[in-house]
Image (cartoon, rainbow, N blue to C red; front, top):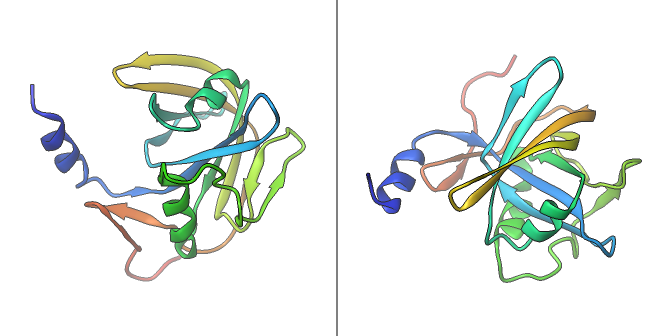
Length: 161
C-alpha cells in the first residue's frame, strides 16, 4: 500500500472543479467546506456524491443534516474556496454573500452552479464519509469554472463553446 503523501501527490494530477458544500447546523447557522471530491452518480434518479473528511469543521453539521447544497465555484471565486478550505476561521460565511434557499440551504451568491440535495445514503470509508444526495433543485449560470490541479488553482484554456 502506498503512503498517504504519495497518494495525495498522484491524485493531484487529476484536475477537478471546486465546490463548497453547505448546510446549516442544529442552531440554523450556515456552515460549509471546500471540496473537490464531488461527482455525479446517476441521472435517474438524479444523484451526486461528495466525500467529506471526518476532521472537517462542518462535518458534524453535515452528518446531522438531512440536506446539503453543492456550490460549484466560478473562476473569480478562488478567495471563497480558500476561505472555506481553512480551519482557522470559525464563521466562514462572514463577508461571503449568500442566500438561504427555499429548502433552508445557504447558497453562495454568484456560484457557477448550485445543487440542493436530500441525503439518501451515507457510507463511512476510511477517514471520510461519502454523502449521496438526490438533487431536488438546481441552478446553472454562465462563466468559467474554478479548477484545481497539482495543488494550485487554475483555469481552463482554449475557447469555450
